[in-house]
Amino acid sequence: MQVSEADRIAAAQAYIDALVTHEADSVPFAPGCIRIEMGLKTGRSGDHLRRSLNRGPQFKLIEKTTPPEFTVDGDHVRARFDVLTKPRLFGRRVCSHVDETFLIPESDGLIHHIRATLKPFISR
Image 1: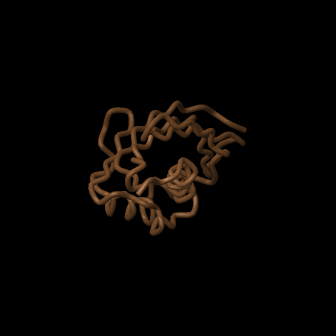
Image 2 (image 1 turned 90 degrees about the vertical axis):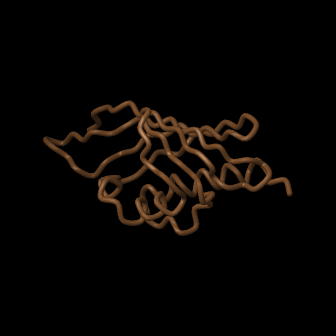
């Protein structure tokens, strides 16, 4: 089975959507999926990532994301987007430029690995 590039981008988009909706049941994680953020493991399995997205307090702060810019290189789908948070202080909020690379093989279309880098910024 060969999974199309569009379907692999849709898998990455499902993850990004779940950051905001907190509804990750349809995100196509491989059982052994891990997520590395800034060099630290923040997800140890597909089920752990799904639970975190559904109920994790760290995600409740996210108000929205900007539309991602996707690039595909073999089995890797890269998404660059911004995360905008809800809390504001004096009209400003801490947000983040996000660069995530998903390992989504053509052979199964599941997210096997996520590597994320974040660059915080202040927004009005």
